Length: 325
Image 1 (cartoon, rainbow, N blue to C red):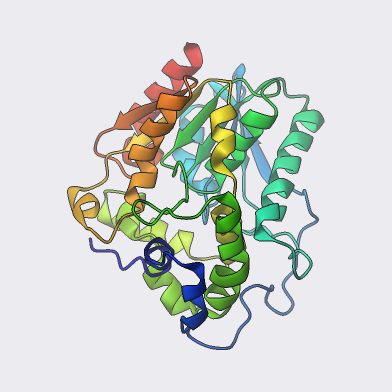
Image 2 (cartoon, rainbow, N blue to C red):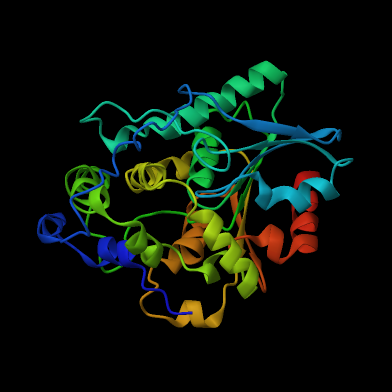
């Protein structure tokens, strides 16, 4: 499948952030950096979760950007006796409500919503008296939250499993010309207010990750694509801009075992020269592992980012083996 990758390509191919100033968007309305009129928000730090299973090993399952806990449904149902599982949801997805928007002028580099989720996870540990559970994080945003928690609180978590997630949102070579501060500035001054603020849902869907990124099964991939794009645009855009402005250097400071499952993807997806971002999900993990001995990439054949749905048996085996080590 050929991906247009509009908003991904826009960032990857524009070397100078000032070029965003001349970019035309779809409309002057609505304002995607604010919640829709009448939208009900959740208290900051509130984190929806559902507890299942009664096994000795505790897992915190965190679905990725755009998804709710249904992506883990089969895994949970098949392992009720093996694990005690807390299926979390990023606020704003599924039937949950997102956090309030930060005050106008707050930098996306502050990671306001990401910090709220991390605070919610730490509160969950205290509330449920959980001792060093395993973080199992899927796809974008959630993987960063898990690895940042592992770097900042290594005493609170035993291990981390990362599933089908990007190792970075930095532009691929030769467009990676911005340092961290420059990347945050480009998001705050150009990418958010001059592109995402007025982008239409139609353009968003055309530019988001294509179905083949989620699953090699075309029908499942389409279903996952629809789920990933269900939430209101302000929710999607807030998370995306915060992850674009995130500091990925914390990955080098992780000192607990991390297994990251690397999808094989379809040859057509990998061969498409427009999909420069695919290296985030593959090669970047191996570069990171060469710098940090605690991170171990494991390739999973015949899978896309939703490894637990494309290869459920292999996924279960890999997780079980990793936790037994």
